[in-house]
Amino acid sequence: MEGRVCVLFVGGPEGTPSTWEVRSLEEESRVSILFGNRYEHFEYAHCRAEFGGRMLPVYRWSYRTYVAE
Image (cartoon, rainbow, N blue to C red; front, side, top):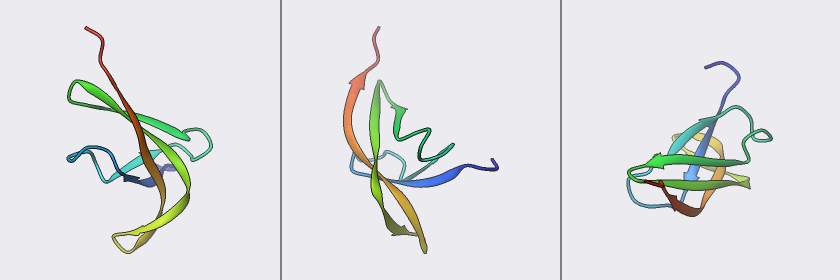
């Protein structure tokens, strides 16, 4: 999708995606993704790291919450 930014996820449980797309770093400084029966939360770390030959903004894992039944 045009205008989106590819970011790198660092930390979190094994199996979470390595990369993700956000609308912008300012609009989505925090990202929550559904992973199994929980949400994994990542926050923009204000740095970049190399992944696949590109320098991507880094989002670090911060915490998890569980889906309410």
